[in-house]
Length: 163
Image (cartoon, rainbow, N blue to C red; front, side, top):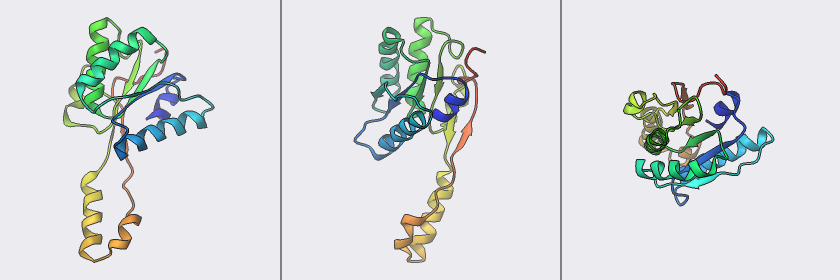
């Protein structure tokens, strides 16, 4: 998602993570940091959330005073929903003044206002691969089960910067 925002012209990209005691949150934060470092940028704005829309909303209030980023990679769609709401209440125009991308492609993401750019994982396919390995008693193979590639779902919250 950070790479998508970079491709859209953003160079000041923050990350709203999930709780950093969770493996998924740590992995998403690491991906954000890696993408920025590969682009020669510093990963500065990392804010820890709790997966809830409320924490996204509270971060929107915090970010209004900071104004140090032009876009946020949010670790799940629920927090992105809260961020959208908080920014909209403050009068910030999304996506004209700020880019937001989420993670998870929950069914409601296309109905957010504006519709949320996000990542979709095929958890059903991954589950099937794991069950197949377990049924075939290949538990040592579980570490090598290829993870289906995530799919970028581009909607309205991440247009090219300046458009």
